Image 1: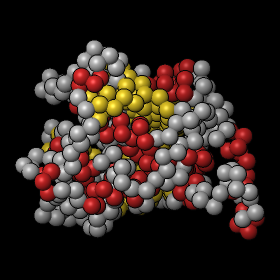
Image 2: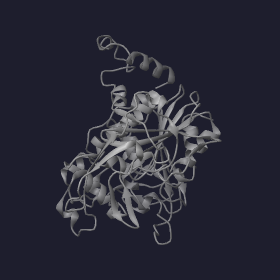
Image 3: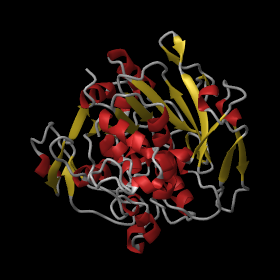
Image 4: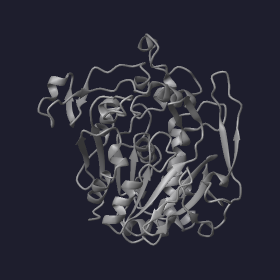
Length: 425
C-alpha cells in the first residue's frame, strides 16, 4: 500500500461506522480492516524508572505446576492517556542507554493482552519511512541495534525496536530462554496464532502512531520472523505493511515436525528455495558448492523449543528426544498453531525477502550456533514457497555464506536488504 493510500485509509478510519459501510470494495478500507482495532488493544504505561523499563508494570506470576510451568499477567502500574507525555530515554533490559547519534532514543512501555512490552524509537525521522525490528527467541532483547543503525545511517528512515518483557522463562543454564510474547496469561492452553495477536497489536499501534509518511516495513529474526510474519498472515496487517524481511525464519511451518511427531521426505535446496529435492544430489549447482536438500524436521536446542511449544499448549507432548515420537502421530493442537495447517492469508500485497545464513555445522562448545541448515531451514523454505509472488510485490530468497543463524540481523548486514527492498537508497 502506498503512503498516499495509507493516509486516505487513516482518514476514512475516523468516519462513523454508518459511513464506512458505503466505502467501495476497492481494498482501501474493508470491513475486515483490523488495524485500528488491533492498535486500540495497546495500553501505554508510564515507567517511573526509565533505567528499569519493567518498572512500568505490575506483574502477577502463578505458582509453578508439577512440570515447572507457570503463567503470568501484566498490567500498567500507571496507565498513560497521552503517549506523547510518557516518552522517556531508552534503555535496554540490562540498563544500557540506547542512542540515536548523539541523542538518546525514546522509549515507551505498553501492555497488550495482559503482556508487557517496550518500544525504542528514533525521534524526528518521520518523512523517510519507518522500519520496525523484532528479535528472536521470545523477542525480549534489542539484538537488532546494528541493523537499525545501518538503516538510519544510510537513509532518512526512522526505526522502532520492539521487545517484550521477560515473561515465562524456561530451561537451565547455559540453555535458558525468556519467552516474551509466547507467555500464557492463564492456566489454560492456547495457540501460537492467538498469542501472536499481541504482536499484531504492537505493530498496528506503531503504524498508527509512530510511522511517518514514508513506507512502513518490518524485520524479524528467527522467532521474530515468526512474530512479524504471523501479524500479516493471521491478523490482517497487510494494508499496514509495505515491505518485510524475514531472517532465519519463520520456523513454525509444522510444529509436529519440529517436535518429531511428523516426518517429511521431500524438501528444497538451501541456496535455491524454489528448487524441490529429495536428496542432496538434486541440489548440485544450486548456488554453492555443497548445496543441501533440507526438509522440515526437528528443531535443535531441543529443551528450549520443547519448552515454548509445551508452555503454549499446556502439555508435555513436544518431546524431541523421546524414542518413537513419530510413531505417536501428530498432536492436533500443534497443527492448530502451525502455519501449514491454520487459516491465514498467503497473498501478501507487498514485497517480502527471506534471508538465510548458510554456515558450518553447530559447535556450541566452540561458540558457533551453526547456520540455518542446523535450525529450522526446512520449515521456512516451505513458508517461502507458500507465499504468493506477483509483479509489484515479489518475494526474494537471499543467502549469505559462512554465517551463523541470524548473524545478519546481529551484525547489521540485513540493513542492505531493507534499504533495497524499501527503496531507501
